[in-house]
Structures are given as structure tokens and as C-alpha cells.
Length: 242
Image (cartoon, rainbow, N blue to C red; front, side, top):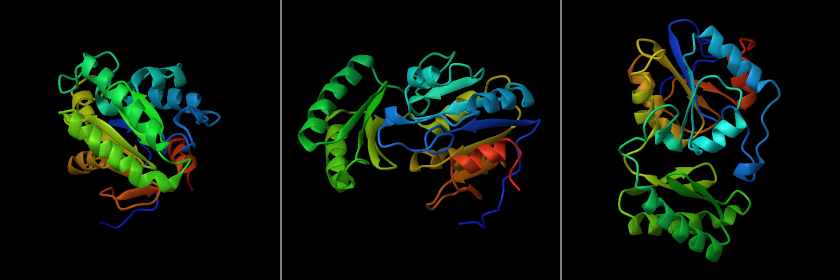
């Protein structure tokens, strides 16, 4: 791993900023529906949108509807379901058929109930959370593997205290590629911040293109820059890191 610089450069004109949500802008909660938005987050995102000429987007594993409900005042684009849903764009053709997702949800509910796992149904997949009972990590992995095997076109994705079953051909890297083809992102240097294994492909994509790739929190990463937690991310974006 390359040396980690102490503070990433603050995004400025000529750059396009892409931000993960959970663990990057907001702290991880025991349940996905229990997160608390930091005070001032909405104002900060609106300020960044103005400073960067609109070239700011949220890229998250959460469903698009969930993200937009929580970020109602955010004027930029939102990409949900790891980029399978991008606001203002047609659904990614690499994504699954809705009928197949409904069947997967039904199977996931049964699997979660038998194992005592917390299920998070998503627009294009499902996640088994075990933050409330860390001893269930192995059970979550087994249920996810069985689900992916039963539903062709889906793959297992490890996350922080969770295991997700998501479309195999959908990724945050692909989301960045689609967004960077659009105005106002096109032609700018990409900047991406994310905290999880689900963000590593996007961080690598940004680094290969000479952008600013920022890993949030602990763990091995391809990113040459690192910030400790969401509070540090907000301070960085606000230009107050010292």
C-alpha cells in the first residue's frame, strides 16, 4: 500500500466529487434506519454543489428512494443500489429484473428469520446485518452465499458488519463511469471518499485516473489518502481540517 498523506486536498474547481453515505457522511448505526444526519450536512452539501459547479454526487449502496428521502434538499445527483439506480438516468441495463428481486426478497426474509439476522431489502438486492449480534457473522455469510447461488446474476459483497447480495455486474466503479460521462462531471478530475470494501473498486478507478481517492476509517485500501471518520470527512470538505 502506498504511503498515506495526512490530509487530502480540498476539492475545488475542475474536480468532480463523489461521496459514499454510510460510514463516510454519517456514522454507522446498529440498524440502517437508525442513522442520524450530522448537523449542517445539508448546508455543507449545498455549499459544495455551488463551489464545484454542481459536480457533486452521492454514491451509496442504499436504495435511491431511501437516500433522496434523507437528503431531500441536496441539489446534486444521487446514485443508489451501488449505482444500479442513478437519479435522472434509465436503470442500469446490467441490473436485475424487478420480478427476480421480489423473489430474492422473499427468500431473504425467510433466511433472515431462521438465523436471527437483520434484513435490509434493497431496490436491487438484500443485505444481512449482524451489528446487533456480531456472533452471527458466519451465519450471515452462509445465508448470503446460498441466496447468491440460488439466484443467477447475483453476487456476495462483504460490508461493515453486514453481507450483501447484489447484482454481479453492478458496482460503484460502473456508477462513476456513467456519471463521469455526464455534465457537469465530464472532463473533471474525480474525487471519491468511501469507507468500505464496497468502495474499493471505485477508489481504485479514481486513483488510476489521477484523481483523489480517500479511504475513511481503518482497513487496507488502494487509496493513497485517508480520513479517520465522518467527522473528519465533514471537516475536510468544509475546509477546516488543520
